[in-house]
Amino acid sequence: MKRLPFLAIVLVAFAFAAHAQDAMKKDAAKPADPEVKVVLDSWNDIGRKLTAMAEDFPEDKYDFKATPAERSFAEQLLHAAGSCYYFTNTVTGQKLPAGDPKRDQYKSKADIVAFVKKSFADGAAAIQAQGEKGMTTEFEYFPGQKSRVLDMAYGIIEHSGEHYGQLVVYYRLAGLVPPESRPKK
View 1 (cartoon, helix red, strand yellow):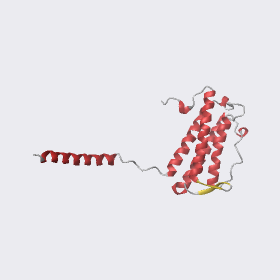
View 2 (cartoon, rainbow, N blue to C red; view 1 turned 180 degrees about the vertical axis):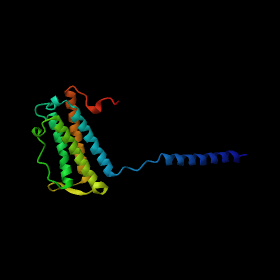
View 3 (tube, rainbow, N blue to C red; view 1 turned 30 degrees about the horizontal axis):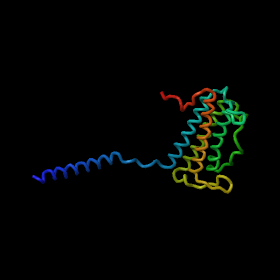
View 4 (cartoon, one colour; view 1 turned 90 degrees about the horizontal axis):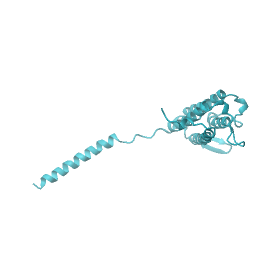
């Protein structure tokens, strides 16, 4: 009779262990995404946010500045989008830009929206062209300074995120709500 409770405990323990193993198999963590996908997703996400702002902000406020010493809304977009070419041109072997795109080259909202879209699309194409193995390829980013593709891409992503944050302030100062801060439908 003393064996019956012991056997019951052993059977319950085995049943629990088997159930736990099944649950662990179902809940097993999926492997991390490849580096190229993670970089590309981040690149496309900040590009999407800046494009949404470029499309949404009223054209008559494109030359709004938070203070006289700062860039205008349009100049912020041109600077952020233009900086993508420090990455794209390095990776594709082209000459680096001479500086920020000038506002007088991009006279309308449509011109700026098209430039923002193109700069992030060109960068995404450069990332895809590098592929997974190319993410760790080193390039001379600035004279005498080498960097890996993924480090350069993340640098531009982070830089673009900083300008996104500045543009959020421009929205608020203009009495507007940025697209990402609006309730989702």
